[in-house]
View 1 (cartoon, helix red, strand yellow):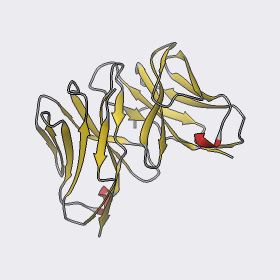
View 2 (cartoon, rainbow over the protein chains, first blue to last red):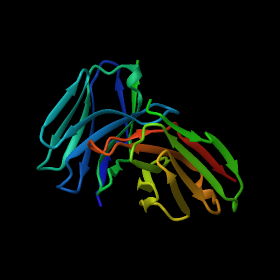
View 3 (tube, chains in turn brown, cyan):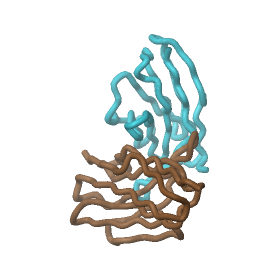
View 4 (cartoon, each protein chain N blue to C red):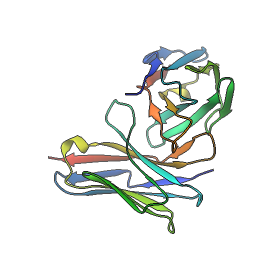
Length: 112
Length: 113
C-alpha cells in the first residue's frame, strides 16, 4: 500500500510569513494528492488538491506543487494569517475504492 | 458541509462493553469510511464500504466490525471496547467519480474507561 510521510510535524511562523509543508509518497502510480485542513475541534476539510498531470496549482494564498520524479508534493501558504492556524494533512491514493492514506499531520501556528 | 451525520457525538463507556457508532449520509455517495484519529498518527482507516453490504478492512481493523445495510448508513461496532480504542472517530464519504475526494462527518469522541 501507499506510504505517506509528512514534515514538519509542527511549524510556527509569524503572521505575514510563508509556510511550507512537504509530503513524500511511495507509489509511483499515485495520481491525485489532496490537502486537508483541520481546525481545532472540527472535521478535516479539503482545501486544495492536485492531479499528476500538472506541476502546480494555486488558489489565492495557497498553492500545491508536485514533483513526480522525486515523489513529493508540498503545500505553500503565503501571507499567513491567524486563521491559518490548524492541522494540515496531506494524502495520496492507496489502492482501489477511492481510498487514501493520510500523512500524520502538521500543526501550523501563526503568531500575530 | 456535506450531508453527513455521526451519532453519538460523545460517548463514555466501560472496558468490555459493546459500542456502536452510526454514520448517516444524505448524499447518496457510494463509498463510506471509518477513521480513527490519535495524536501523532493522523487519520487511520479502520474499515470502508464500496456499496451496500460490500465492506473491507483498513489498516487498523482489529477489534472493529462494520455493517452497511443501506446506502445511507454505515455502522461501526466495537465488539468489546478496550482503553486503546479511546479516540476520535470520523466517518467520511466519497462519490463514485472524482479523485478520491472525501467529505468528513463531525466526529465522535469515544472514551473507554
